[in-house]
Image (cartoon, rainbow, N blue to C red; front, side, top):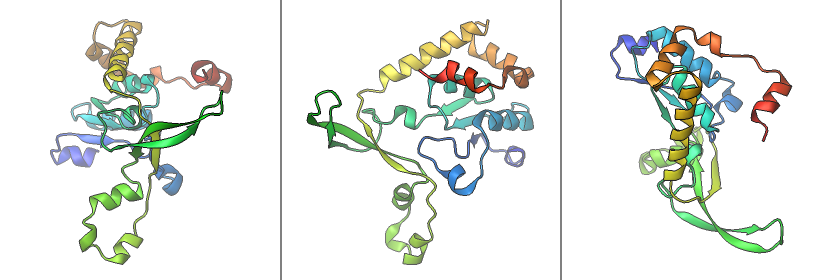
Length: 204
């Protein structure tokens, strides 16, 4: 990231493998936890270069983490998958209801990791590609069907509410003020969890 900053880029996307549709860490063993990546990239540039936190937002709290530990903006993929505004057509799939065991048709949408094989092929000019080029592709993502869940608006509203709540818990009046507090000593706000503490925090 320091190399890119020295060459005058406008921003850097940070995140190797944290996305819900990504298998890079499983397939290549490369990548670091997203908070660590953001902290190190911010330290390397002194906060002068905008960082785009890409991936790892499985809960709204992860959005807060990304913004407090160095991200200027956050990219969302799986967090918004299945909403009306996302690309792709809805398809009907048969689903068995657990209570009645009745089979019903339910709308689903396709969600792809951007390094999944189909996403890569779609970005290529397949007509001009050699057969060997396609065979050499190494997929580092998956394609999933997720239930269609209506408009993205209520999801974004909830994210904003939780972000505002986090700012208040931090004892500040703005996101910028809380970000500045975290930037001075980010390690102070990272606490190692025991397994019981992890379950208490996240298992619901």
